[in-house]
Image 1: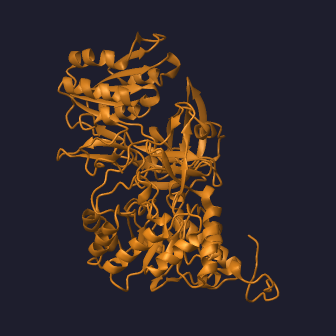
Image 2 (image 1 turned 90 degrees about the vertical axis):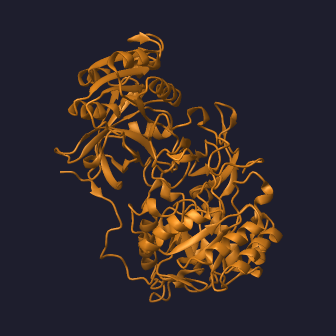
Image 3 (image 1 turned 180 degrees about the vertical axis):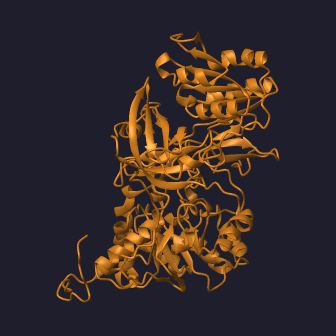
Length: 284
Length: 340
């Protein structure tokens, strides 16, 4: 269950191309699982920016001087995220969380690969820790356009069995995409589950590669949201249900983590004609 | 020690005593704040943020006869003090809605106003007939003004004749005592004329306003931002349009039940609607910004009424229409205008 709390900014620090924000979030941080997200009210009570901004929960500390605190990783994309990283220590912030369906963890100590694109690595830290606690092998692949847009390589190296880095421009690690190295890594380590967070095209390719290797994939999607709590119906994508029927599911409440083989990646942004309730000729 | 506090509609001894009950043409509600259709789904998601039974009623997202996928994404764009949406009435269809959503709301003890939408006059009639068998429906809001339909001909609310046909069909298939509210579009030349038509066709009252048809072009892709091209503008950006519509309708129909909505985000905003003539106020887009907004706004409205000397919510309805020469401060027992 999610709660709405008035938290406080504890710290805003640069991390390459991103900012890491630490917040007090009493009542939220205690209940976070890897893959959960939160939303923040932007611009204060009289804000002209009405839509909350959603962020994957990066790290939590449920106890300490400030009670429950948590971290998020913010990439500045527009006015809202700019406002956010300009906050100062002790500024109030309206937080709703934890939201969404988290990653499903394996019951057995199987071999796993975690794939993060850009700051999509943020929710993988907690996941890696919990997976290691379960005795899972955890290979991590991080990728980004440039070295600056990688997040958390140093710390993930400590948490992971192995860390592979790719950059589009070759500024760090292997030149290329995360999906260039995923297949061979899975082959070498007999991977049973792939966990991924990043842009849609990356998730699509990860899900395909996982299926090719008879492995499960758990993909955390990033869709534009207005409410984050399941009432506005803006963040939908076509997903095949257990009954074989495609429905437009909300990334905020039925996701953000989906089984990779259930999402109709090529049809994201459209209503496939065989979707439940799809428009007949002429549209709606 | 943390200064952060859990926010919520906490019981507050300082709340002034104001009778918040309201009457909407046969529908008596203990409080005047409602959720706005399309901004609360079927209530369940909001129950974790505030007690659904504490506000006047839940107005559910417009339901159609059959399951509907809605439109492709992007479905939404943030605009100054507002948002543009083009969802396309995604929903499970009336049967599943009754079995799943209405059943839950009934069990939860919430008062429910069901919003219905159809592609044809016949479909509205069928929806009304289907709802006739359900006990837990307190009122029906007839959404004749959703702009998210590709065929502009489907915007029944834009012409008096088609608006009247729909309301007539719903009235004919509903329990004669069922309160019916026609939800009107502000995108008309004369909203009073449309109101007149729906009232003659059997509407108990009107809900004003639905979203204002708008459009955003993405200057990077240099194409329309929404997959549906145009969308409905909501939020505080349209609030003065809503106040004007409520004002005009109240002026023409002194006793018509009016549910006001359009950009309300605070108790003062709600008060503005009430003073213009609204008997109840729906909170919509504000929920996206603050999921506990309906209950917060209801408390703020009670405070605002109390601060102005009102003992009864009903006394404030249409109060801005009083003659200009009516004494304001000469009668402090009656009107105690305390600034906040």
